[in-house]
Amino acid sequence: MNLVFICDVLHHVKNRAAFLARLAREVAAGTRLALIEFKEGDLPQGPPAQVKISRRAMIELLRSAGFNLLREAEAELPYQYFLELHR
Image 1 (tube, rainbow, N blue to C red):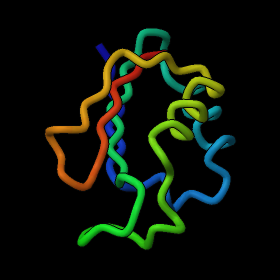
Image 2 (spheres, rainbow, N blue to C red):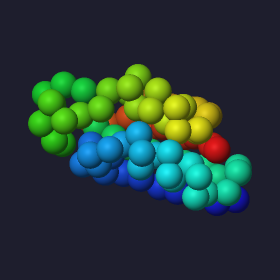
Image 3 (cartoon, one colour):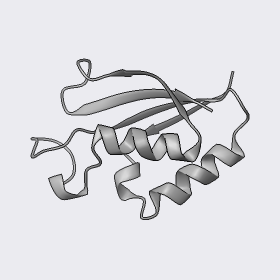
């Protein structure tokens, strides 16, 4: 099984849709993607609120790129959300 792990990076990427679409093209079918990003809002840790990507918007970006959501977990990380997807 192939795995791509991305943690607290996508809020820095300017053209996220193109980045994720290319990632989906480059990885083998069945590859899993583990993604962690900061939750919305003004929190004690993480980037400024205006650059954060909502969980809903992130899931839509990932689906549009060709990834399917397997599971998500918010309770385990106080300031971040975790998504597990596959292509």
